[in-house]
Amino acid sequence: MSYRRDHRSSKSALFDGFDKLEEGGLRASSSFSHEIKEHDNDKAIDSLQDRVAFLKRLTADVHDEVENHNRLLDRMGNGMDATRGIMSGTMDRFKKVFEKKSDWRMCTLVVGFVASFLIIYYLIRMLRYVHG
Image (cartoon, rainbow, N blue to C red; front, top):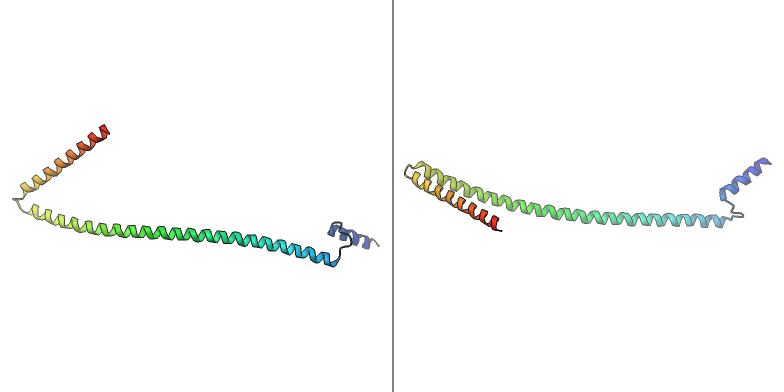
């Protein structure tokens, strides 16, 4: 007899005071639980879709930024190549000038003009800085 009492008390503890619970009630409860789980899953899927969309936009932005930087680097490389060509031509001309003894005077004159230009430029910048 005590087994039956224990069984009844454990059954009432299990169902928390639901007396006369029918099979239809159990099915309704499990289907309600299933609906809650489905709703939670839908929320999780929506959250994941939002994260995926955000990551997709972020990846596209990074791709655009990389493309812009690559174009900038290509232009810079082309500019450096052009400058290298100009500088090598200028260096060849300087070598020719220094090889001839008669052109030393011309070279000294050019260096003097460049130095004078730089000094005047520096003085003008200083005056603008002081007055500005």
